[in-house]
Length: 502
Image (cartoon, rainbow, N blue to C red; front, side):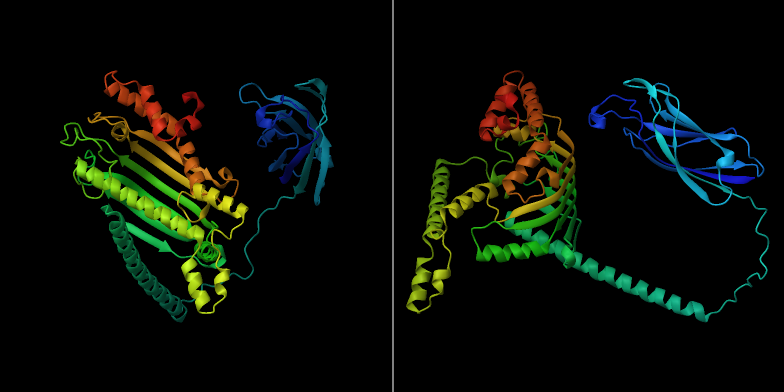
């Protein structure tokens, strides 16, 4: 037998079989495929979805007798349908005598017959490009004239690769040991930093940092199993307040260095820091009070800072309230004085330079020296930054496996003094943010948080929690009144996200 190689490449000028639809961008289209039959054997290509210029690129092989010259190859085109029968779009008969016995031939063939498209019955006009060749059969290769002799075993050829393997193995183990030591140093440094700054008891299993400096390679920071233990006086249904399985953060250290340089020279600007990837997997926040807990009748469970910083007493005396107010007024005055000093400029330093005969003081850029446009831009960016000195260019944010037990926390916000019992946590499968959400631009912290809240579907979560609180209160609280109060607490954020709440 000879081997017939038949390739179906592409098509053009197809009749539209399907009406315009959103999947075809509101254009007429077809779902064509080719069926080839040769000497009783049939093969076909895959169908191409919603196109009038398909690309099949499919090769088929058929076995035909060496002396076979009569007969033909039938090429049929159909429109694929998932439910109903496939609709013919034309056919073509190729005689076997036209297939070259030596070499290959590539040509376009035109389908013939009637086609019932979505606009009515018409003559087939589709063309298909095919490539075909006929390869002669063979009886076998036979035995080689000079067969290879078995290779003799030589110890010298095995010693050097073995030594290289042992050296590579030892160096790899050494590198792993050094890497483990560095990971341990990073772990304890991060642990003590968080403990000293926040006072929270945090447990982590592993911290790994892979630095990348060349060609814009970001530095990879991976933290496994972060657990924030429940402080004294907090919600005690779970041992952990927050449990995160893994955090992966990619940050470009070159942009951090450039942002530091720009901020040092032009303090009124907000430079950009590139954070290509932020991935957080498995978040479990538990702010629920266990039924029968001794803390179930105590208000302000986890909202107040005293519980987070060590479980100080909940109730304040009038003297403590007055002292706290005086301290808040003092901090506010200090902040106002610092802002006033920044706007007036460093007059004292400038005077010292003038006394020393140094004229470089004129180069110090103060707030008063900025143009009106620069002042307005700075004030606007300051509001959007939410205290952050830089902007962020984020390419991918993925937060998956989120479980939020927030019913008692919301109850505390509302001023409740009792536990709601076993409430269902808010479950979020995943939150995905890509660079297209920010149009490939750097954004401030406010925009990043707004996008995160929007993707979280916060409205439905709060509605569900409000209904649970209303049910637990025994119809003594209107669930919609809870939503209104929370909307007022959040400064109208909920009504901005969902106009149906207005």
